[in-house]
Image (cartoon, rainbow, N blue to C red):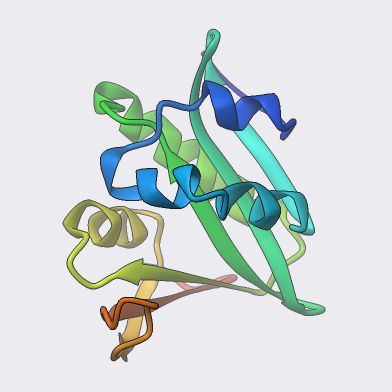
Length: 143
């Protein structure tokens, strides 16, 4: 059974992050982003950390979403998606935004599974010159 718990810094060390996100975790970028978030939570299955999520307020009703997922999440993905969608519905935000690397197929697929709409390509957005897609979720909008 999955549990949604408040984030604590030890959760990041316990997360076997997927290779695609490993550089962010290893470079020390993830912890300050998580600690400065307005909302931050951990999803666990038993003792295994499956995801750490965070939202930074853009304005009163708009949040910027950050999610770090475990490697080899496999069969837990459907349940994790359901838990995350339920979290979206319970939060006070009318809009959530996520930025996904344009060449990260799994991230793009998960954003769509969460009911987020691809709102366009942001060219050369990443520090290395890579592109990202801008996704948005609006309360009350059906995917």
